[in-house]
Amino acid sequence: RTVYVNGEYLPEDQAQVSIFDRGFLMADGVYEVVSVLDGKMIDFDGHLVRLKRSLSELSITNPLSDEDYLAAHRELVARNGIGDGLVYLQVTRGNPGDRDFAYPPADTVPTVVMFTQAKPGLADAPAARTGWKVVSVEDLRWGRRDIKTVQLLYPSMAKMEAKARGVDDAWMVEDGKVTEGTSNNAYIVKDGTIVTRELSHDILHGITRAAVLRFAQEAQMKVEERAFTIAEAQEADEAFVTSASAFVMPVVEIDGAAVGSGTVGPVAKRLREIYIEESRKLAV
Ligand code: PLP
Image (cartoon, rainbow, N blue to C red; front, side, top):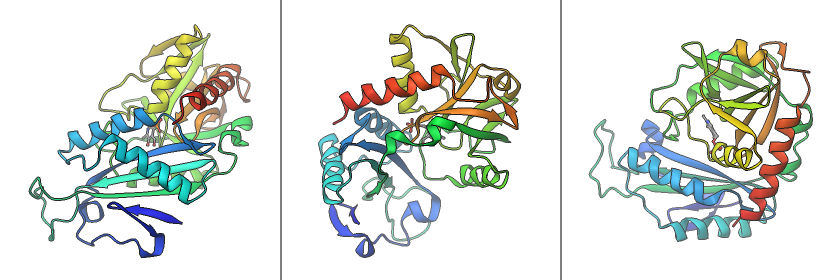
C-alpha cells in the first residue's frame, strides 16, 4: 500500500512519524474516515467541514487547504487502485521534540497521515440484509464527543464487550439515554417517526446522520431529534445506525430483545437505498 505522510507518498513500511508526536503520546489529534464508492469520495465536503471544526476546537493549525486534502484523497485512491473502500485521514498536533502537558508553540507543524483500506462491495454489505445485534454499555467517554479525536480506547473496549457477548456493536448509555454506537449514530423508528438524539457535546455530529436526516425529510418522513432509552428502543418498530463506513445499518436486536419483527424494517432499508443512491450522485 502507498500511504501519505506530511506531503509524501511512500510505501507503508517506509512511512515514519516521531515517537514524540503528540498523537502517539497523548492522543492529541483528530481524524476523519471517508467512504469511497467507484473510486469517488462520499460526503467529502461534510467530512472536511467537520475536520476543520475538530482542529479549531483543539487549537491545532489546519495544515492543508481544502484542495490539498481532496487532491491527496484522489492520489491515494488512484495509487492504491481503490474502487470501493475508505480513506483514513489523521492530523495530530505534531512533534514538539519532548513530552509536556502544555501545548507546544502554535507554529509546531502538525502531522498529517492518510491511508486507504480496500472494501470491495462496500455498498452491498451482507450485514445490511440481516441487521446488527447490539448490547448496551455505560458511556464512559469524555465530555467532548463532538470533537472527532483519536482517543478511541473506550469505544474499543465497548466493541470488545459486544464481541464477547456475541453481537455486532454496543450502544452507549448515559443518564438512562442512548448516546450513540461505538462508531455510529443511533436511531429508532416508532409509528413512522425517525428518532435520533439531538446534537450536543454528548455525541459526534455524524456526517452520514446529517445527510440521512436531510434525505428523510425530503422523502416526507417525520424526524424527531431527542434522546431515547434502551427500553423505548426495544419497543420501537425499527432501529438502525449510520456512519461513513456502515452507511445505514439496520439494528434488529438490543440486549437480547428483538426490535419490531426482529428483521430489517422498511424505513431502514429505504433510507439505506436513498442514502447510497443520492450520495453516489454527489461523490467527488
Ligand atoms: N459516532 C461516533 C462515536 C463515531 O465514531 C462515528 C464515526 O466514526 C459516528 C458517530 C458517525 O459519523 P459519520 O457519519 O460522520 O461517519
